[in-house]
Image (cartoon, rainbow, N blue to C red; front, side):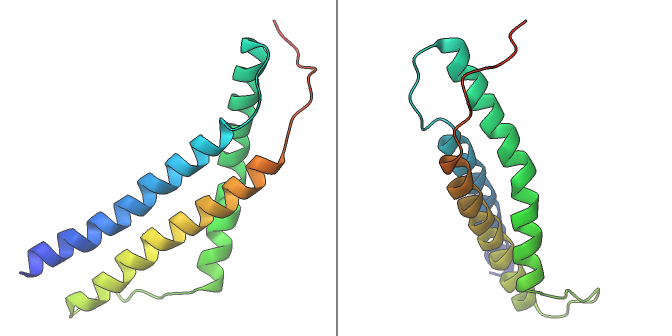
Length: 113
């Protein structure tokens, strides 16, 4: 029973990671496109912007909701809480990052080579 419970909590942590990454990528695709090259450049710039902004939100959420993990964990319930915390903090940082990314629209002048 305990191995199943640990696997469930680990899956919650990884699902927060996967959903968070999907939210950031999907939010970069949400804008009008008239030219294919311009559209691809804007998508790439928004994904790079998300890669720069996301760690700031992740650090801020971890700083606001501090959880200290002991080196010797005797009870599996402490693992449970940390797995849920990790998945939810990643998902929350991704949602905040996507809100910022959706509001930024880059100009139309890009250096094409």
